[in-house]
Image (cartoon, rainbow, N blue to C red):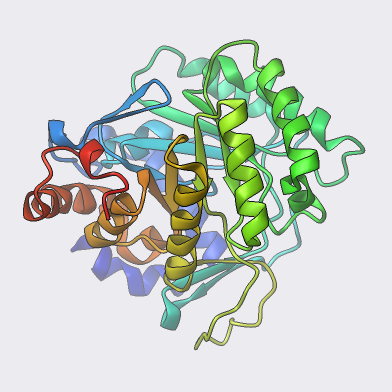
Amino acid sequence: MAYSLLRPLIFRLDAENAHGLALAALKSLPSSLLASPPRPDPALAIKVAGLRFPNPVGMAAGFDKNGEVPDALLRCGFGFAELGSVTPKPQAGNPRPRLFRLEEDRAVINRMGFNNEGEVAVEQRMKRRAGQAGIVGINIGANKESADRVSDYAIMARSMAPYASYLAVNISSPNTPGLRALQDPEALGGLLDVVMDARGSDVPVFLKVAPDLLPEDVDAIARIAVEKGLGALMISNTTIERPALQSRHAGEAGGLSGAPLKQMALERLRDFRKASGGEVPLVGIGGIATAEDAWERIRAGASLVQLYSAMVYEGPGIAAAITRGLPALMKRDGFATIAEAVGSE
């Protein structure tokens, strides 16, 4: 309720300034004043890649790029938080404006360009939270001007693995020229070998892919994911496609997320479920805003779900709202646990 009253004022701000305000608020407010999530329902817990998630609803990468507020996000009711994307060197990203709300479409377009403070700054923050409870993944990327992007991923895997519950390899952002070429099967296998060797531990490796994939790409990526023993496939990043949109920002370049991505991301999730035969866990991302959205993704094969754009419109209480709604949907459809429902459609 409080966020719905504040939203008109927040939306008067430039989208990136509003994002900065949200981070500042989460950093400055004591935990007692943050949204108080309900006690986790044991039926919502699920084990993925050897990790026990208290509930399946996570914050996607992009909100907390520099690892400033992962624990605040967990206190807001998220079952896990993913920070990043983080690159070896600090990176300013693309020129502003580069983040746009499409209010009429309940969507966001971004062309941020992996702006972040870099490996050293994020590593120092992660050292300070070492030993704290909660699942925090670290999404790793490559610098735009890097002459050897595979080496960048190795650097990040090596430095972040000691502090990450899991590593998310991001090769699907549309805002770093040439990055998506690493999804090509010939390049992907070698990249994953390098990352998995560099991490120096058994921390799970997740792979985040684009929704704009051909059927043969889906089959090849799924096969590689199974062969390499990936912890999960994350389906999906933002899209470069433009469905029918109403907002004046519809023509902006960048990746589209939010409600218009929902059907494409759901279809791609089903494609990967079929291609992998359920042998690798899937994380459903894109257009998830309600408990019904999350439940549909779980029934389609997702063991976990993530959101970000929907929080722009619904506020930080969205995770708690979704986790409150899931038990009733489970009961309605005859499932005692989330794990039972995965892929049951």
